[in-house]
Image (tube, rainbow, N blue to C red; front, side, top):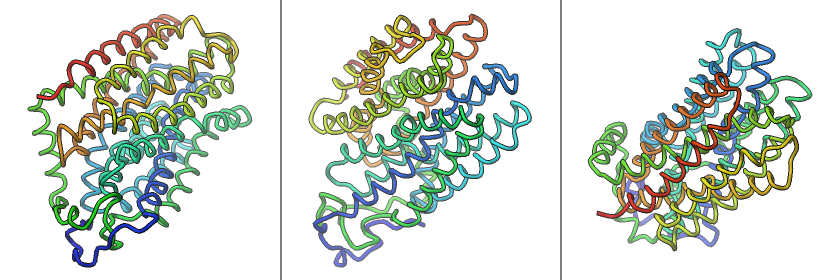
Length: 427
């Protein structure tokens, strides 16, 4: 069972040291998030090689990606509950171990698309789903009283770094070997992250005799132990949230968010670039630019979420994303043109920047269960992503073009902007 602040004699809890260990915890959690994130974007990289070497359809590969993305969201709330009950460190270590094993099985045991769905879709989906933004929210809420927005932004940026920054290296490995090389490399990253988690990650400030960053002893005395019956908490949080209109607004908005980011760019950008004659290394370079811009956008959004109405931020971010996606079909070329680089920067800044303001709204609306509620909202994010991953492959197989997908995504972003600005209002 995990340990909370009330399990420690409050007289033994000291005030925060000059350098608070919360930032070391953020670094350890960031390693895990980056490793898990590296699995998220390789689907688009290996799609064409799988089509060419194994003869699988894009729809079949898209089905595996859809399963992966749905589990990436659906596992989050239960993983958060397990972290409450069994400990953050233990659950994260098990998840990373599962990723290591699954990456090996994906590489050596996929004689048919069924096995690809099993290993890449289900097994890796469960592993990555245990280390998502819900994990980031759990760490931030447990270790920070102030600067939660900044901590969440940093952790989200780490996930984005893993998703995109490794792509150029993975594409080079793909060119020099085959599709298995990127998968096994992601497994090696998970092994490195496992070492860091076992070495540095700790359960809570109380376990080392301090308070959360920015808190004092009086504040921590109000903390109650909510780690009993964690799975019941997860269900209760959902039942309480579904009676609130704002939950459905945020969930709908996040479903559209997932469809226009994970489901679209992770799965279909590289194949679409290939259709225009662009090499995988060039497409991966553009995705890497998106990843670097993601870090700037996410950290900035975390800082802004502590100061500006999150609803306004969401409306601006979604509107900008929609405009960039509407322009993409006319920007595609066979090379990494300045226009595409500009697109990558703009889209990257606006991509995952929606997470910190959404987390802020969850904390404002759902209080102590905000992390679990955000986990359920993230399920809808990944449902949208999975639907787009599958639909995109089907559209490409039937029509031979991805263009309708980009236009549909632009309209989805416009709808999300309206939901963020108008729908997510306080009661």
